[in-house]
Image (cartoon, rainbow, N blue to C red; front, side, top):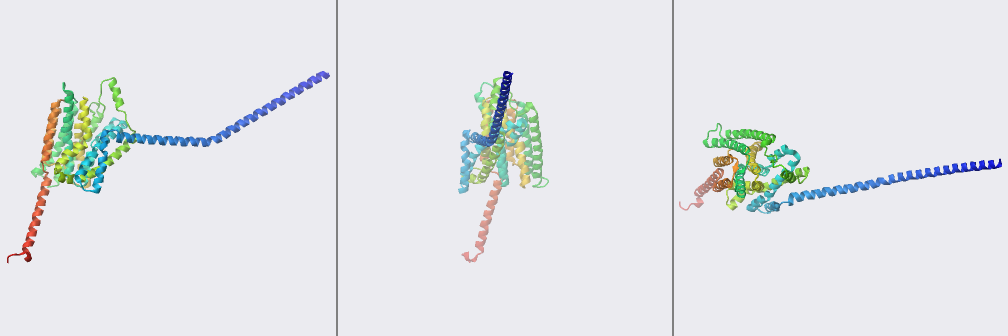
Length: 477
């Protein structure tokens, strides 16, 4: 019994010991769990400042990315083209205009400074068109395609230089239809002499019809002025010009709608190439280089920059004409349009060399259509708003020149083919036009000359009468 008791007591002790051991182990486990939980809490409390540190790092990284993106876009916009080396010429022109009155230097430096800005403006418009789609992109191209000429014209209109506005817009049409198209036909024909290059005859004929419509809008006010058959002298001509301008704007809006909604005739849609590697290469070439908002910002900056530089250019036209003995008509019709469209001219020739004449015609005749059906009527409406008597009477010499040029181009594109001989003919026609404006005196200049001579003779007669009536100057009694 005693053994049994001892054994039972031992077992009980063992059981008690085991229970105690279990209890101790449980307590230790709970302490470990509590310590782990405390460590987790402490780590969570310590983690809050670490998160803020990470946030500051991400902010720094995002700022660096934005700064690098800004520098990259500035490099693409301002330093990616060799033509941009002419940008400082505009700044030099501003400095010279501020410090002196050398109008000839101001004029030519302003011209050189506008050339790369006009090219970059067209490039920024194309970049924005990638994000807006073909419809809105077509509208952007139609609006900003000739923005440089419109900016110069609007500032000259504000200064009251209506003849400069008329002649510069007329010169844009003449340079695009004769010079640009002639260079494109000639260059493409020289590179591809063994064949006639083909283009979309329907689109070319449609643009020629719109150009003839614009000629009709310019012709009737000039005929009214020359024949003196106005119902009210000085008022009927202006009223007819404003009414015709509104009709031309409506016609151009309908033309844009037709072009943007009809796949086969859309000048702004990519041209269909052969299936295969050509499509992939076109897609790679047409990738945007800057972001959407970057395009908007640079478009605004370039527009403002051109507007500021246009002020110095317009203010120096008359002084440069007197200093260089070049007629204002020649400067407005020949020099200003060539500079404003220099980048588009080069692009049209390059596309013709690559046997893509549809794009060349879209640049040349399409740009002429924009000026004739949108630019000129738009300036008439702007002059109406500003209280300037801007009308469609471009004088008979200018209107006849435009009429003959449009007829020549219409005959050249009616068969849908081109060669170097057609290009040579267009270039020779442009040389004749340039020579004509070099020896042409504007009627307003003639009137101003006669008026100044009359004022001079009147002053001489007045001085003679005063001299004869003064007894101190009488030699004979």
